[in-house]
Length: 413
Image (cartoon, rainbow, N blue to C red):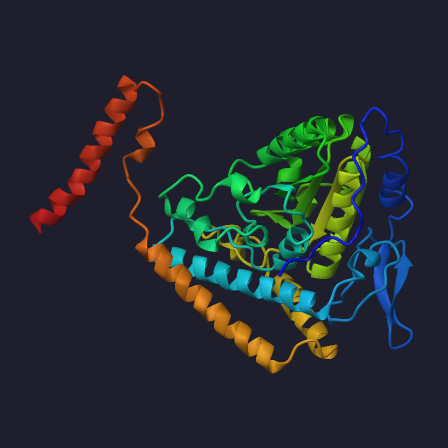
């Protein structure tokens, strides 16, 4: 299922000829609209109520599955059909199933590590489906849902985590860059790529993903500055899942993350990251303005990491279960299912077929991973230096002796 953008794409204007691209919109989004969008029921239709108590939060679908009217962002999903909604639901369910299978495979010793996206499906599917085929995506190491939207086979994501390759797919085939392990560096890569797009005269855009912890990195802030100064067509998509490993938001920032954009001169928006429709709408808005030559934007998807940071992490050591339970009530998949059922857009036949498809995906992932070769333990020495090095040779020999000691021990038994 592909959700196409419904707005017209205008030719790009040069940075030099743009005088108001980051002015009026930035003020409107991070200044005068710094209010909360919450919901109140006045009739059978849920309407928007705004107060000044909390930061802005764009929401189009409540946790109960009710639509929220938002005059600024709702038009970006006005043309969405029941088939589109079922497609978004399918994307989230299958992405979660794949993620659960990968976690299980790591626990079984088939993968060395895994970074779960559990709880962040709406942020990734909504934003991923907002992109066009000619847009370019720069992910971190957790964007499994975005990879799904870009047509990357999920099994290709697992080779790196098994240690059998350094990526697993051709970035140029899907305009989806390889996963980036170094925190925040992809924001600079994305900005440079976006500057190149402008020089080429294309009307495509770039989107860079990172987490709340990465927003404190120098690379990300440098990317913000370059993008603003050069009016680069890049969208910075921050998945604020509340925890940078074990560091909470309170220890990372004194202001809501989306407000940081204002200091660099471009708009920032906080969106309900568990609302797939809101994420789709806001990302469409940001990408379309970027394609029109109006420069960068920052989206803060306010969501929650339901599981561990990676499979080597134990979140019970630094956060309480009541926090997780509170966020479970906002589950992105359950939210859309409630909406589909209430609007009679899906029946039990649909959900049953999807469950079968989900199980088939899990089975395929298991079979593909278990058929992958074991990692070559000596491959890490091969490309340290182009022409070899005496120290590397010494380390390789030491490692070989270490490996051989296990065989000797087994033979002695």
